[in-house]
Length: 66
Image (cartoon, rainbow, N blue to C red):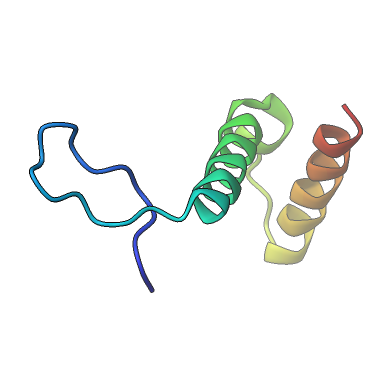
């Protein structure tokens, strides 16, 4: 896996940056941030992994429709 992050601006020879992969990485990070901020998924204490996964899927659908 190759890292897709910006290098420090004062670096003399910055490594190349793939902007399309960086843009997709940013979208995924924003999605997980929104998912963590939602109260429905953050405060669940389910007994089984399948019920917790169902809550995550429903919350993901709500975020996608928003």
